[in-house]
Image (cartoon, rainbow, N blue to C red; front, side, top):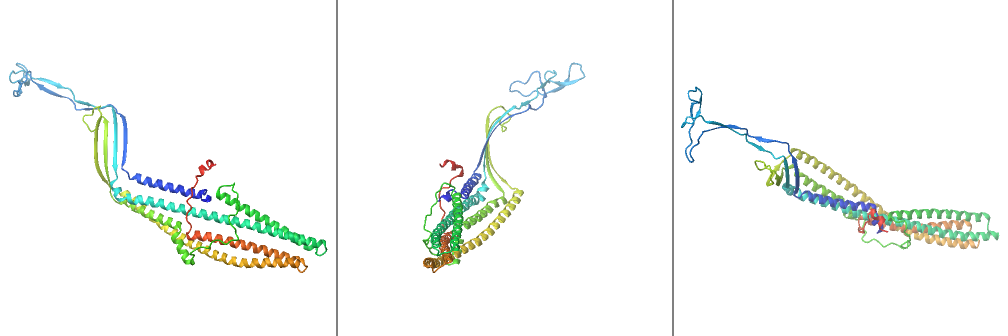
Length: 468
């Protein structure tokens, strides 16, 4: 119905369902293997690896190819010199000392790299994946049930608002009919006054009654307009032309399998979607506790890495050349802080669960009271219908008799006024009793959970301007 389609509270619940579905997607994505890539460039400061220099001793003539090494001897540096030098034992000539140049490795100053990394949370798959997924699904189901409960509530509120408007419409009609009757009696009294058969006081009494009824009509019209505005606001349409869709005098269809009050309360506790939503929320908390307990255990991750770099640090010496390398492995990590944090998170979950359990008990008691009130209101309305029918029958007959007696001079104006007031009161009571029964039936259907959600399309308020 239109009230459900235009309800901002239902739209808010729809948005919460979308948020819960997105949260479920986030949960599943969080358990996917983490694949990442990185590209980088680095400019390095000048540096070199220096292995230093040295000296080497060489003979004037080396050994023959394939021959044995020539031993080194000690002898005078020159004929008659007291200084001793290394000499060639064959020739007696001093050997040459050669200085070797230093050995350096130049570091490339420009570094380029391309990296791909893959991480697989193995322990999360074992300990957390299933409860985390089911917890997110349960939260989504809880929000969906809350949405359906809100649809039923909005539809019930709209129905009650309609009955309230219908009551004001019937009141206006009843009071306007009373005004026509009083004006007719006032005209009769005016004629009798002109004929000398009635007093001025009697004329003024009826004139005062006309004024009172006109004031009552004005009040009833204000109530009707207020009720119409309430319906228009609820339906989000100020251009609706309201008209009664049923005869308020007809009795509404009887409710089947009503049972006693205790059975209705049990039925409400079994069927109310608000309770089911809260119970789903508790289930989501339980799954959250199971998923969080993974923090007590060491974490196992598998990883892989591929690198394509210039220069690649895995190769020595470093050279400005693009080269690829890879690595795979597994790591087991444990954090004491993580375990302590997990313990605190689980305490929070358990506190939230106790809060939800208490809220469910509050809701169960409220539902029991709601069913009781609707059940007793329905019984009262049924009794009022029977009594008001008898009252109206007597009031109509009393007014007819008073009118006939007044016409022959056997009744006074006061008798006419009192009979009309009694008749109007009886008419309003019979109308109100029938509307009260419709209202009580609607409340009882809602309270017992027998109403089903009206799955109409809910418009986004942002699209309101585009709907024509």
